[in-house]
Image (cartoon, rainbow, N blue to C red; front, top):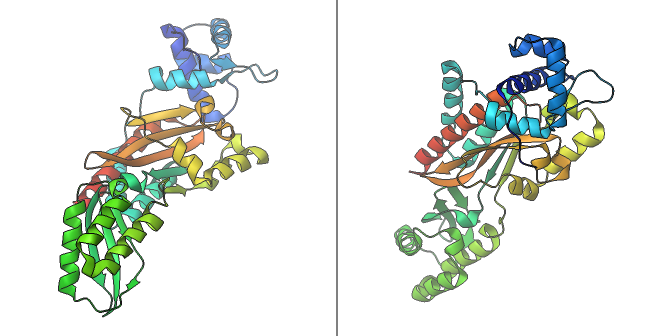
Length: 347
């Protein structure tokens, strides 16, 4: 998108009034409506002139022969960057949403799913959460859990949650004390590494050191190779996708089908939701979207973290006409509370 030109105060107020009215009505906005909404004490004729100038500058378009105008992608970008006055969440809303999130803080996956559901239900737009790739998780502990005399289950604890392996059958029984000692020994060698740094060579060296329990350590190596590294793109959760059908922009079957199809492709969503360095909250609008199928949408996204490390992105997807005054602070608030809950869970 080209650089956005500056606007004088009157044009800015008129543009803000048009955007706010269009967000509310989804109908082209006429000059008479702008006079009522903008608070600018000028005639309809003056507003019409200013609207014509804003159209020449690329902020407005006139659909068909309608007397009204609608905002362009450039207008929404200017509105979000320069004109947006974020609505404050009420104390009651903050308390209710915080309670929803923190009541789920028993297991990371359930907590993340609950945050996505709470966000979608709050504003009736699809919500999306993308976790970082497992390779970027920090290893904390490995636990071998005895299931019976010859079967053991491996559990890996990271800073972002828990990975549970498949039970393994051992040729001879291993007592719980030995399993605990092996768990602590392996954990001491791997603690502080990311899962991506726990290479095959590093694990094979450990097998050599603990040859007596080679079967168990080989199980750990295969587990990393086959299960953890396989999930290279991370995990994506989508809640409330059908809320798009409630929006007039998505009444055309081809358009909504294309958007819903993109929401089913985890790799595409993960690419769209990659955290932006130095920007805890960001908005992607229309033509800025990564994929052509999403060019009628906007994305309001915020990163969430565990102990100061970015662990994923929480976002709302909606029409370009979404009420940014509410969605931006809402996404920010829920991302902050998700970070707090996950940090406490991982402590």
